[in-house]
Image (tube, rainbow, N blue to C red; front, side):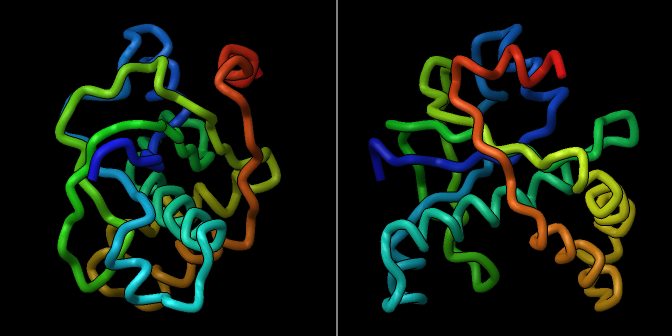
Length: 164
């Protein structure tokens, strides 16, 4: 797929690196997008619902990127017009690989948790490994993050967001 909108999981410290370097990570990147697999799995959904599903999956993946020194907030970097390759998986029909370096200028927006979500996100970060191993209790802790809506920031607001 080319020219896709992709939701890339990130952290605030990684977002600062994007600003400093002018690129979103090193290729290949793991991201989420509206894919044919998602449309097939959820035929009654619409474009907005599918995009929300892709963004939510990226937000949950961002928990796994959080180091102990990171501020516990989920971050999703939204980029437009990039080439993606769908990843076949039974778990997440939104999963894609971005094979090319993504220039920071392609950022359309950033979604970030509020301060109020930090306790739940910190708990999710601490439970991430056990949740990935199939622990139902840890998975419930990680899923609690879904109760928090992410805020939306335009590309030109990133510097202000990082300064907060």
